[in-house]
Length: 80
Image 1 (cartoon, one colour):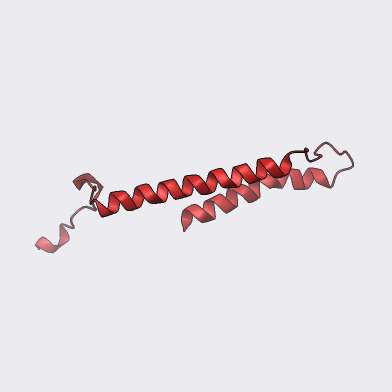
Image 2 (tube, rainbow, N blue to C red):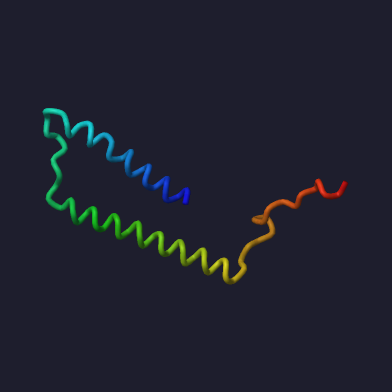
């Protein structure tokens, strides 16, 4: 959930300068002709990357490929 929040925060902050400059009198930020194509491939690439990472995580979890150093430390407070 934190990764999704971080992605949306990053996307919103990346559009912030263009929103500020769009209100100015100069038209220095005109959208390019292929803006829709670039947007589509960017979203497609991010979604594909998310699917590949999810499949890798599920494969690792189902095969029990966790090492001992990845597990949480044992609490030593119970010995007393």
